View 1 (cartoon, rainbow, N blue to C red):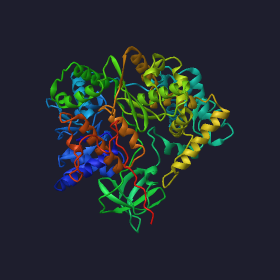
View 2 (view 1 turned 120 degrees about the horizontal axis):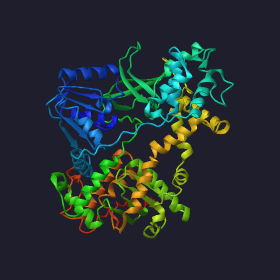
View 3 (view 1 turned 180 degrees about the vertical axis):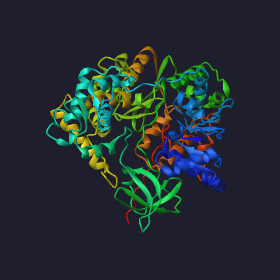
View 4 (view 1 turned 90 degrees about the vertical axis):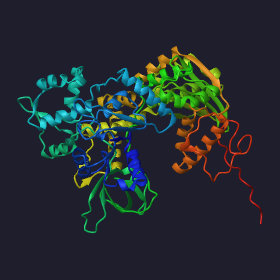
Amino acid sequence: LVFTNTRAQAELWYQALLDARPDWAGQIALHHASLARASRDWVEQSLKQGTLKAVICTSSLDLGVDFLPVERVLQIGSPKGVARLMQRAGRSGHAPGRLSRATLVPTHSLEVLEAAAAQTAVAERKVEARLSPDKPLDVLVQHLVSMALGGGFQADAMLAEVRSAWAYRSLSEDEWQWALAFIRHGGHSLTAYPDYRRAEPDANGLWQVPDARLARRHRMSIGTIVSDASLAVKYWSKGGGGGSLGSVEEGFIARLRPGDTFLFAGRTLELVRVENMTVYVRRATSRKAAIPRWNGGRMPLSSELADAVLAKLDAAARAEYPGPEMQLLRPLLDVQQAWSALPGATTLLAEVLKSREGWHLFLYPFAGRSVHLGLASLLAWRLAREQPLSVSIAVNDYGLELLCPSEVDFAARLTPELFSTDDLLPDVLASLNAGELARRRFREIARIAGLVFSGYPGAPKSARQLQASSALFFDVFSQYDPGNLLLSQAQEEVLRQELDVQRLQHTLQRLQSRRLDIRTVKRATPFAFPLLVERFRESLSSEKLADRIRRMVADLEQAAGPGGYQDPAFAIDDERPAPRKGRSPRQGKDGLPRPPAQRPKKRR
């Protein structure tokens, strides 16, 4: 099993393997949640029978599957968590007395560091805890309507049953009464609308669904897994009987025109037309194709794995490089130390760089992408509160970048007060568009709670209709029913899931106890380089980004000298002329690529 972290990566790896080894066709397969059920069933059956040699998959084969023929697991990129790595490794050798084997395949240099840290964390059994949701009221509302539909329920008995679930152990009487009122008449602002009178008690106190039409609608909406509206992908046939391939999200297809090609289900497909929430396609021979993007969450680096990475860096700072992985990374870490310093568990490394773009600040808390997003927004807001600034932000799992076009004395501005946990919640809400984030989160809550109906089979509603409906409910509740608990849930989920405020607070407390190590650098360091790429990714196409990365890597390797880190994946193309002595004409003093000079046009 070849595990990738996203469906788009699975599509890319499957196609790349077939391009490299066409003779493997029929021996390898693709598996992810957006493929048609028949395709996934065939892959799983072939795995059990041992007729497939390899399957490129996502977390769709993480849990609940036992395939005895699987001998080895490959993890493409970092698993981002110790528990996830152990779970995926356990898919191989899944029988008493057999050995589970997993091979980690880093996709860039710092993932080699993560792989070495993951090995140590697994050996020490430092596994992440599983956190339970805290009283999700949208799920409770849906469950109550389902129980009323399935024979009815008595309120007191149902309350005891609900509280027996760990997530609802602290459900208060006020919250319970609110949930009952919500399914009875939709709350204070929806009392006049009969569509939201979904359940009511009879004379004996038995809650049931009184309307058969509402019962049918609820049956079509049961479930808590939501995503952007997806379109079925089918082969084009004049008779309308084309086979089904799976589903893609509406936002991706909206960017394509008829005749454009894209990669899906391991095939290069040409878009024919979009009709009735169905994408009709035909096979294409083009080698260049778009890759579908699904709006799944990016997996952040877990705290346990981050601590293991920092322990490896502390050892490297003491010139200790145990294991072949750390020996491989030694030239790169030597360059990092020569140009700046290494981050560590007791120090917070801050790098200040002046370039043609402005003044850069790079920080390396190693707290994961979601925490760094909240931290970068918080720091930018607190800096701008004292001095008006325009700040650009880039984050990854290792650190964050703040870029200001005007001069900022970061060395003087990085004070302990900047990392204070005082007034954290209001500052975080002020630093981000919290209202819009809560509005987006409310879309999912509205669907699960039954406020928004996605449509009947054959007549689904578009994503635009669903978004407009949920936005209308959000505005109505905000204006006329501000105490609606679904609004509070939306804000709490934004803070807990998207911004991870609890972990952000813990990170700020840890940063206050660390020694601040501020370094002024002349060029982007190996740890700063991925942050620059992350920011460029937002404004450049994939091809232009790849070209720019090659030029930047070549310039930085030249600056590192012959003993510096050499990555064959970014070797200078043979067609490119050899660099001249001294600084490259494409490189500024800061080590960043300089745009080519524009020659003045000659007058005819």
